[in-house]
Length: 521
Image 1 (tube, rainbow, N blue to C red):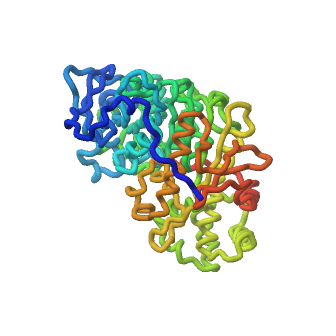
Image 2 (cartoon, rainbow, N blue to C red):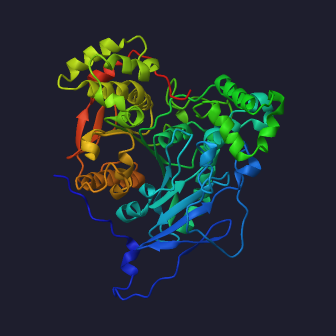
């Protein structure tokens, strides 16, 4: 039976008066290098939202971030900052702005000298969309559970963060293909320089992220400028084996210029084109945006042909969900939930042709019917597309970490099926976000589901244990060994959590011969 521990007591709690009849406390004020910020209290947690960690990027478009201007007096930090520009121009409302380099902090105390582990979260959205301006990323529960400081970050996305212009625009644009990553490094530098004033330990920083956020973490592991700014990595359904090549990225840049009616010698004009018009041109280019192996800020692929030696000494946790593609594919193609044996091969070809290599869809179906005789055609579709598309990169990244001499890697899977919509989604992409944040009330997959809370307790306890020690083993869990290739041990987050060796090994072996293609590259 899973035992979920109560919230960990904090050392300074013993210093508080015992009376419950306390006056309403004043709003917390913290000192940063740029100036003082005023937050608010969420019960016993201090919250600061929308703190600028860099200047308005409209003034420095396609350039590395620069520090925000300092201020006098006390600046309110009560609301989230704007999202980065994304989507189509019709969505460009007041909630989007190039002035998006803002972060949020949750802390149990502003007591300087009390060195809490720091958890820095990067959101998903495939480098193109998303933000941390959502209740599911609220850090208060993690603070209470583990006596940690939580930071969440917004940064430049899509072409604003990853449009590679160096081949066309020259040295001025040398870093343009990775300025979104440089924003994240800038945020980590802010953490290094300021987090002590929020009760955090700059020498105990864990970066974590889901989907594109996990891929951002993996990419930072190969970026020299990020070295020393984080000390542990926890990724959820987010792996980045390779970046885009300069040639591929330059083709996209040419397409964006063409959509704007500009010739390559007019690259500099991109710096002043209105945001909405530039968004439309980038969207019309139809590109997937990912970091570029530019030979400078990203000198090599993060996990190809091996794991970057730059981060060999950093402990890492890698996670994946059992049914990734019910959310990644099924949400956009409802037909995949009502397939027949006759329509299944065609759907496999439609969605994962580039991932299955020389394997024929028909042979894949035959293999899965042997693996899982009770599966329906739709269940075979989601299992096979998860294994070929989402899980393949995960398996390779874990293997390459295991082959590297250095710090341990720990692997987990979320197998717990959400009961949403009669259970059709099972354990989809994104289901681990409310679980690791211990925010089950704020996700449609887990809201109102009593069984989700014990699982959230287990996963969030593992996260804070990892942030504190570099090891995710926590009370209430079975022993979680580090990953190695002889047994391939993994923690299975289900009810109850348990450990398995080489989960879904037959599926792994089926796709072992196929060449993995990083989505977006």
